Amino acid sequence: MRPVFVIDVNKCVGCRACVAACIIEHGQVFTAARPSNRGKPQTVKLRTWVEWREENNGKPSRKFVSSLCYHCEDTPCQRVCPTGATYKTPEGVVLVDKDLCIGCGYCIIACPYGSRYRPEPHEWHEAENKPLVKEVEPTTQYGGVLFKPPVPNKWAFRTDAVDKCTFCYHRYKGDGKLWTPACVEVCPTGSRTFGDLDNPNDPVADLVRRGVAKLARPDLKTGGRVYYVGL
Amino acid sequence: MIVRNTVWGLPVAVEMTLIAVASFAAVWAYAYWRRGEVKMATLGGLLGVLLPAAALAILASELLKPPTAGLLVMPLFNPHANLESWMVWGATGISLLILWSLLFTLPLIKPLSGIAVWGKSRIAMNTLGVLMSAFGIFAAVYTGLVLAYERGIPFWHSATVPILALFMGIAAGSGVYAMLGRRETAKWTALGSALVVFTWALHLHLSSIGSSAAAFSASGASADPASLLGAVLALAASAATATNKKFALVGGGLLAIVAVFLIRLALLSWGAWEF
Image (cartoon, rainbow over all chains, first blue to last red; front, side):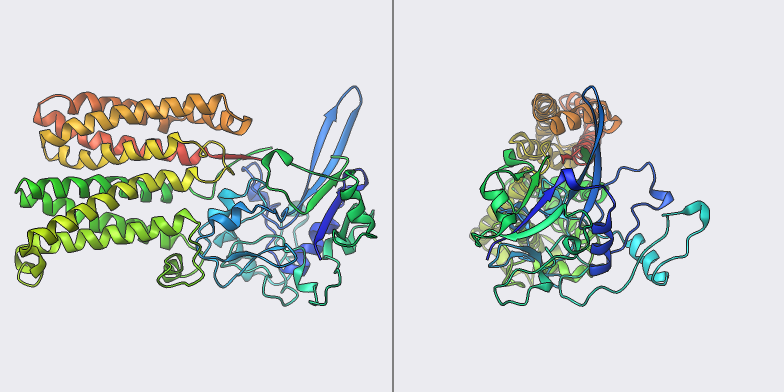
């Protein structure tokens, strides 16, 4: 089995249900929208995120582009990881052994897609000191900290290791059958889809085989398991 | 979207500068020992122990896990250590630089010379001196290789970066002895500092005609006060240490080390990705 992710940009409405589902599934600290962080240069602080791109080719338009780890075939993050914490499963999913990761940040430097991040101590201290969901003041809407225990799994968010998308590998039962990642499960428009490249009847994999879905940055020659339609 | 690096910043710049100073201080320690100048050799040897140890301590304190987890970088302590990673070779090389420097320096310290009996063997001291120098040069180059190896950040992914790191080692390591008024090293401080400025300017130019992220970094770094001041100080250090006046040598040595730190800081802080 070779799982593949296809994102149809034309179907994405930017609701960020995928982001919320991912945060809840993996217990990530969410502080990117805190008022104190406004105006600061933002690096990616979550496993998956949605950015919008505005164009004006005679007619103004907006595209929502959601992203996650591309699970490269040729993995720069794995190559530079000094402790061997970054590894690839037989299915081609790139994961981090949270016990071995020391948080040196070399994988973040090496990743050309910004798919990894390091939890900042001030963020998790704040998160730990707040219960589950903070009741926000009306003036600081969206400025709170969302924190809850993750679905138990060894790749869940931890404050002492670099974090990244796992394709929800903890949902895989090891039986050779494709699983459904949390973000795909909740996507209301079907923009995010998940398939198996080894299954000739898989409609998602077929988009890749027919060349309808394409890699975001083929010029970087890392390959990957995340393809886009309409990018 | 271009995003600036905030992962490796000031602590890494400090750490790499300490390694740059130690690298060629260790080389000079061996050279002075060969000339029979034990005090100067002891100084370089001690710097070869203390500064890399401080650098590794800074690195370890920056980790998300307790500092002792830094040992996982060493193949000796972690069977899963990734030998493809420059960080493994760098941390191992720096640790060995500390070891060779310690073994080289102990016999030079009077009260310890009775215990460090290998100091009586010229062959043993020569071997340790060569190892210390080789690992010193490696440590200097490593601080560039670790940045240049991967292409995630185009501004760093350049052959000029390890060369710049080598010249920084020459300038800063020789600068320590120039600060003590030593003329033989002052010439190398002058040469090293001039080469740092030349290579930095070349690197900025090459980056400015590279990818958009590299051009962004080059443009930002060119206007950065740290970069500008670093280049000016390096030129001043080069001019000062090229003279034979003791006062100028002392100031020039100090300026060379400060310049290396500032240029390194600009190099790190202007690294950027294009997503």
